[in-house]
Image (tube, rainbow, N blue to C red; front, side, top):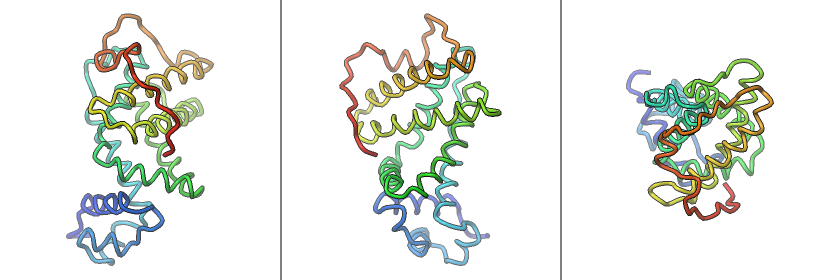
Length: 218
């Protein structure tokens, strides 16, 4: 409705999420934090989960708009690494909110299922951004695999305070390598080309001294 800035509402929701669990966030509190009436808020969002979905869509759009043209001819794994690191960098300002969200999902199976649906849709877009097929059953399997990869990577990212995100990149690289082996059954999910120097190679070398990630809870 006129006068309601959806971005302002989503930002207010994320600020509250950084302070408390997802299920403790009241719609009235979002309205008050964003400076809109409940009536106007209802005109834009049906629930706090709708606000979360809007955040996921906004992240998708930002990642899709920031592609690296240098990687067009790179191997699939290199392109995917770049796309997923761009995604992590995009959500960096919202680390506290996402840490809280993941903790809430661990305690609420219905929220976890809803988050998986959002993440699955987002990862289908990330596959497309990397030039990897996202259609059909094969695409859904690939996307669900990336949901798992990102969940494991984010658990490390939550505790990674290094500006270069070395531990996060090491984890993502390792999990994509594991995914590469698992997805080979789908027939050439990856297309590795030796010797390519991409953003992944520039920013992270597999043999660099990176401490083990451990088993941090999200």
